[in-house]
Length: 264
Length: 264
Image 1: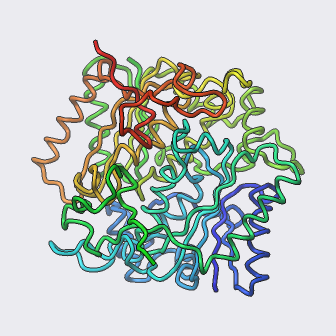
Image 2: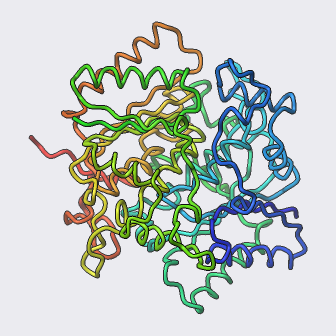
C-alpha cells in the first residue's frame, strides 16, 4: 500500500510526534510505502488568498470556487498545492493526524484542506444537472482510496461519549469524516482517537502505541463507516434528503447518513 | 451595545463583504458601537507556533496549553493576540462571520480561535478539582456576553435540513456554537445562515439583507440557544455526562445538551 500521512502539530517532540513515529514504523514494517506531509515542517501556507491563483489579474474579484476551478483545469495552481494533490493521487490510503483543538482540526490542517481540495479535484466533479448533483459523497476523484483520522484529544473519553458534555466524538468528527473525506470519494475508516493524553505515563503510552499499531496493521481490512452514497438511490434528487423509511426507527441527525450493515 | 464582528473572507468585494456592510450599517443605525476584525485585511497569522510564545526558550519543547497559560498570565503573548483579547473584553456581543468551507470555518478564522482563545482566558479558567471541572460551558471570562454566527453557505437549505445530505446545519455548527462560543461563557444566539448564494440576484440579496438587518435589530432581545450549564446540576461530575432522564424522550446526540424551554 501507499500511505500518505498529513501531520499537523507544531512540536515534533510531542506525544503527537511519537504517535506519528509509531504509525510510520509499523506501516513500513508491514512493507507499505509511506509519505508524510508534516505541515509545520513544510511551513505550509494556511490561508486561501489571491496568491493561490497567480493567473487572477489584480483588478479581478477573487471568487474562490471559480478561481480554484480555473487554476485546477489550466495547471495554474501553486506548486505547493499541486505537490499535495500529486501525493493524494499517489496514495491509496490517506491519514490525517492532528490534535483536537476547539473540537476541530488546527488551522494549518484546515488550510491544507481549503487549499488542496480544489474545485474540479475534490468538489465540482462530475455531471451537475436536475438528475445528478455531481460525483460526491462516495464518488469522485478519491473513490477507491481509504482514509482515516488519528485524533489526539485532551479530555476524558466519558466527556466525548454518548451523553458526554463535549458531544459524542463521532458526531464531532462527522463534518471531517463525511464532509471532507467521504465527500471527494474516500472510503472512511473509523477514527483512531487518543484521550486523556495530558499526563500520560510510559505504560499508558505503550498501550496506546500498541492500539495504534494494531490499527495500522488492519488498514486494508478494517470495515469502513457505511455512509450512504449520494447517487446510490438513498437520497431524493435534487433536494438530497434521505428517502423516508430507509433508517432504523429512532435514527436521527448525522446517524441518518450511515447505512445499516448488510448481512454477510 | 458594543459589538465586535470577526470577519473571515479573502474578498471584501463579495456577497460576504456586502452582508458585513449591511450588518455594520444597521448596528450603527441602532446606536451601537461596532468594531470589525477583518482578518484578511489585518494579515492575521493563522497558525499556532513557537513565535506565539516569545518567552519560550529555543531548546524548550512547545507544549501549547502551558505556553499559552504562561504567556497569558505574564502578559507575554504577542501584541496581535492581546489586541483581539482586548476587543473581546470590550464587546458585549461578538459575531463571527464566515463562508462555510468544507462544513467548517476558513483556516484564518480557526487560527484566530486557536491563538486568541488562550489558556486562562478561554479555557483552563476556574477551579479544577474532583467537584468542579473549571468555569466553562456557560461560565468563564465571556459570561454575560452574547455571541452569534453569520454563515454563508453555498448549498441549498434542503441539503442542510433534518434529513439533508450535508447533515443538519445546527449540528454542523454545534462544535462552534457549543464548543467554541458557549465553552468560554458566551450566551449563544441562533445562527444567521444564508444559503444558495452562488447566483444571487438583486431581489434575493435585498430579501436576505433585510433578514440580516432584522437579526441585527434583535441582538439584545433574541432568545438564546438553551445549552445546559456544566455547573448547573445537569451533568454528573467528573464524567460530565447528562444525568439520565433530563431530556425529552427520544432526544439524542448534540440535542441532549439543549435544555427544554422553561415555561414563561
